Length: 142
Image: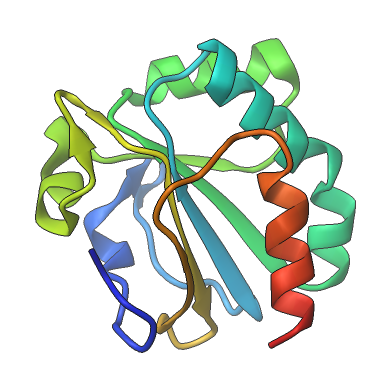
């Protein structure tokens, strides 16, 4: 796993538009989750969506990551009106590199990056309910 101060390899993730990069946000929340449209993942995604205005106000980008492909992400976003990015870690390659795989899916792990891509917060064991609010509270303390 990455630690605070490490650089996160965001360019190893892909979205329908291509490889991802930093976008000038003050912070980027990269949350890894097991699978689209499953109970815990839906709770977590819906909480991020509910708090998205607060994230936007603070210039914090939300980026969900799973091994699911773009079409699965699109259906998940449409079904739950999710208005933030979901990226694909094809075949779990980055998850393997980070040591966060559980079988063929990611464990729930979240990294918060600063504007330069350095890890400033790490959540190695995430419970979906309340996680989105906890991140906002913790970023406020940075």
